[in-house]
Length: 348
Figure: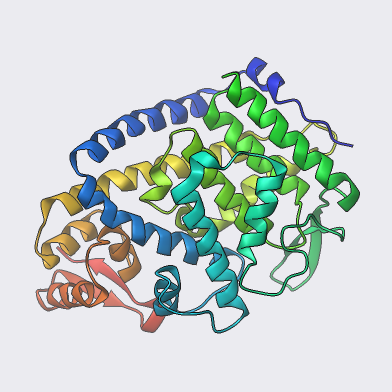
């Protein structure tokens, strides 16, 4: 069986790209702490929109979808789930809320991970909720011609509980002893979790919730204000490519996890950069059209209404649509596509 020894990680050397990403993230953490002290009320407005985006994006990655209106109502707990997809979305919302409110009281142990999994399925009848898998699972890829290939075989069900215990034990050891930089060990833990693939269903979504939990517990709060799941969804192919590269040789302990570490660190840094941009728009208290104009100028090339919504969380959809219409009338923008494919291009 695969063994785990996270203490060995402290002896590894890291390339300049990883060290640069870590340094840049810590610089952004310092800026965020300053903003949190100076503009606490404005920043609270970013929290609810990030919850909605996280819930929508993480489920959409797995093909679990509903309308934007329903997502918003479900996350705000203003409606009840109508179908299986909405039951799964409501469960994700519940776990995300628990992490937001109680991250410092959720130890990283198998028992707590099982509890989070059980809550994720609390709106539906799933006999395996909160229990490790009872069937061998596989990570497959489907190609354009329709054929499917197995890319990776996770641990067998009988090996799973012990492995899950071991990665939690090793994580707590190196974090508790300050042996390994949190921004290194968090992606490694998540990668091992995904390679173990401990559940029949819900592994990807729970891995993203655990990423947020581990980051919060180590003082990286960007996911509270900017959705990390949304960032991953926007670059889903890169996410799966990095994961696939890092899985080669995992069973033998000879894997190269660096591609996955770089992907996760790049995602965290991009979220911090977005946080800074959104704060600058929120704090100025501009009229709607000026907020949308400023957000639009932050986007290179084509952009969508969703791009603007992310940068202007305090504006309603109708305010954003009205501002975009005015900018079209003023000749500042050109619209392309129809329906969901609608996007906009700068003209001046």
